Every structure is written in structure tokens, then in C-alpha cells.
Length: 399
Image 1 (cartoon, one colour):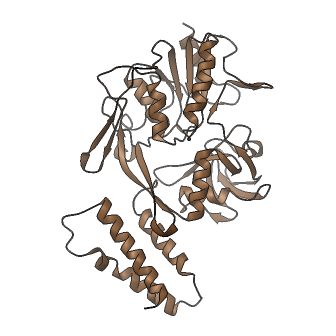
Image 2 (image 1 turned 30 degrees about the vertical axis):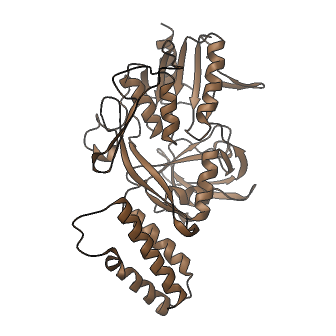
Image 3 (image 1 turned 45 degrees about the vertical axis):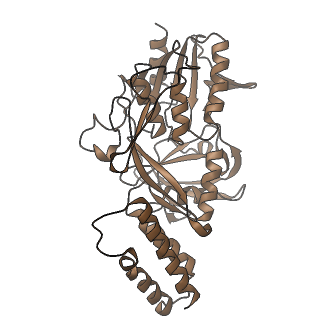
């Protein structure tokens, strides 16, 4: 048997093993090898008759991408190279343009530049919709493929085409990639000696912005928050605007800092066939005294919604801003055998303490059920010059 056929038989066996482990179906009346036999037949026809020589690994990657693309916008296949970019992103060590990318339920790619990044300096704005990278359409690409395309050699240029509300034609940007370490936690203003954590109008109110829930977020937050408390903070503005999410474990730890003993869990994860995993607060180390306002907007997603919704349900914080993004699903990342990359797939939905699932795709017609609905609705018309949401938070904590 030719080596390429062996490769495809191994691929089919891997697919069969994956489905046997993750999604057994009693009604299946034929083996998975039989089900995927047309895939092997198609591969044979392509290799024998396609006009140009094609790399067998490219075919295998395409088959896996197609498999994952049938699920939802948050599930995807990652090649080995994309996996490396993803791990660097979680570690906060990047060579890129400094932009977060979120995907909507209809597949739009929404950009949010990191403060001080090349993307921000180039004029990219939060809410811009990405349509192509270096002339290649981004509309059918996974979020991991997008991030890999945005990464590259230091000081190289990448061309972006975006659509922006109010602009009749697409906009073109050429942005330089640079190496940088992303800060998950930022303060109110940055001075020559680092972040300033207190708002100017009331030195009792700390303003901590959590940009994402990467691996080091909670360590960065604890350091910042402890400094605020030691300097007399009685109120906290927890700013989760434009936060695309990250690691659920980091979100749970952040909630646990402010929620003590309660009959309600701080989060419930509902997996396949209704299996529930409940997370409860630890009373040790809880700060139950500091007043909290959480800021969210339409781009606050996933782990940011876990934190804002849980603190809201526990009566521990007032939520101010706009209805959030509505990504209430949990993705698992599993490496494939043989160094063949990884798959990221939706494995569960999370429930807020009072039981609500906030995933937008499940409640598309009922806007009161998806996302986090703020206690105080405030929209920023011109956020760069007049931050009405922040002003509302300061006013609430100054009472």
C-alpha cells in the first residue's frame, strides 16, 4: 500500500477515534470507517488525476478544517504553526500588530487594537470589521488562521482591508509587526513610572482594566489590586470593555476574589448530555467590602461575560455599559496525535449563578436572554474623547 494511502487511513482512524471518544451515537448503524470511505476515495482521485501535484498534508489539513467548520464559528482545526501562535498569544509574547480579533455568530471578524500597539497607531478602531489580509479574504478563515496571518517576522508589514461603520468604501491599512508582550491588566493612565490606578476626580476609586484572560492575568490583577487597597481604595471600577475572553480558569479565580460563601455557585458549566460542573467560591481571601462597578460593552465576550454576569447575579457589582457580545460557550483544545496540530471545539455552555445560559446563538430572537444586560445602560458615542460609561461608574462609586 502506498505511503499516502497509509497516511489517509491513519487520518480516518484518528477521526473515528475522536468521534468514538467524544460523541458516541447509539443510532449509528455503520462504522465510522465506512462513513468516511468517500473521503479516502476523493483523496485517491485527487492524487491520481488532479492537474497539479499537491502536498498530501495540505489535503489532510483541508479535510480537518472542513470537519471543524461544520460545527460553529468557535470550533476550528489548528495546524502546528497556528498552535504555536495560539500558545504565544496566551503567554502574552507576540510578534504582530497588537490587535484582538473576535468572531461574531455570523462570521464577522471584529478588531480591537491593544493600547499603544502598531494597530492603534495606524488608526484601526474597535469595531472595525476585517475582510482581508495581504489580499487574502479573511471571511472563511478560522480565528487561529487569522492570528497566524497577522503574526510574522519582526518589522515586516501586513496589509489589512477593513469595513467601518459610516465609511462608504473599505479602508486599507499597512501595519508593521513588532515583538511585544501584551499586558492583561492595565490602569487608569500610564505615567513615566508605570500605571496609575486611581481616577483623577476621586482618589478612593481604582480603575483596573482587564484586557484579556491570559495565563498571567490573575497574577497581574492581584498585584495591581493589592496596591490599590494599600493606598486606600474603597471602590473599584473593573473595566472589561473590549475584552474578548480567554481562559475560564482565570475568570473563576477573579470572581472568587470578591464572592464569599453563597448558596449560589460562581459558575456552572453544562457539558454534553446535560452533565454539570459547578464552581463555588472559597471564603478565604475574599474581599467582600470594596464596592465594585463592572464596565462592559458590545465587545465584552466569553470570560468577560462570566465575570460580569457572576458578580451581577451575586449582587456583588453593578454592571454599567452596553449589552455584551453573547459568547457563552466553552471551547476545549486537544492536540492531535503525531504532531498534526490540534482541534478546538465547543464542548460546553456556561451558566451564570442563577442558571441563565448567555450564548447568543441559543437565544437569537430574545435579546434579553443572551449576553449580559447591564444594570445601568450607557452608550459611548465618542469613547476617545468623552467616556460616558466611565463617568457613570465614577458617579455611582462616589455616592
